[in-house]
Image (cartoon, rainbow, N blue to C red):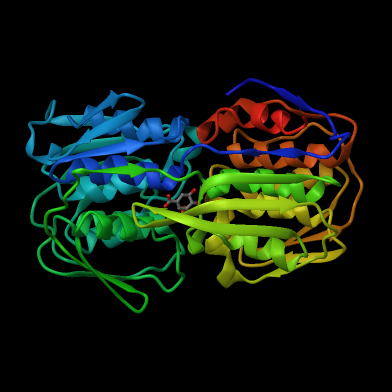
Length: 431
Ligand code: S3P
């Protein structure tokens, strides 16, 4: 993707109250589960990013009905019972790992032949982690080179229930299994020792699924989902995190983000920022679709280094590049541990983060799966190689605010994968 941005340093405090686009993870699930349910799900606040659009177009290619209605979307249930367009359906998942992995779970138990493709980045990402546990349920899935996309699925009814313990900390793998379990025979059990994000479980329960939490194991029996209701998707905490970080770093700043999702399994970034000494006020004042919602207010303060243990990473996995930027401005050496999963995101985010920090003059060292960042460091504006990865582009858009000189992000347009208006909203806080 092209579309460069040049971000200049903040010469004054950032101030303002804003809302951010709807949560991407919840949005994917609302389209998929809404299509599988009985009834019509009204979805308000669907984010406009490219990833969610990929899920929508794939579902539509499969014959699902999703239409606009006065600023919201109506997702009609029951698509699996409607005739599909052809014997073999090719589905382009674009850049979106969530689209591909969740649809693998749905389609494994759905009679038909499906081929899931993606862009160059998605085609490099590991899909065996999903295909293997699905195969234990009887799914027939072929991966290109045994590892990734294109993914060919020969879907069939009557999958066996699963009893799986996740071997990688991935909510996408867990969700794929739960989606397959919806059409399997008998009770499936998925143990998640890592406590990854639980949006699928929450939305399933909200739609009336026969689901039970048993310690760290999710138990699910197939049964109807009822969707005649409205889901107001809360703002994405992963998007709000950029403004929280910007406010924490730029002296004198005060920023609030309203109507944002506060799911504790997504809030690790705020927890770590607090430990670093950030001034953060969180007010939970609503719930939506089984998810807590509220306002996050943050103001500038001096920060000290933190250690992030591997067990904490799932709750802030998408915020690690941003946290590394924050760490470069904190007193001492921060150690972020257990970052292996970052190597298989939209880019090798561990290498990309360290390289971009070093390009700006920061001290960042990768040893195994640990990233150490020492601060505080006076960053200098640089050209950032974000490798088409939206989270790298946005994280270093924030770093640019506290750098000397301008920072150029050649492929800043890739922010549109999750947050099309990001750089404009960041500019808007300059007052
Ligand atoms: C997501 C899960 C995480 C996260 C991704 C969205 C989801 O990926 O990084 O942005 O919606 O389930 P993994 O499942 O690979 O950890």
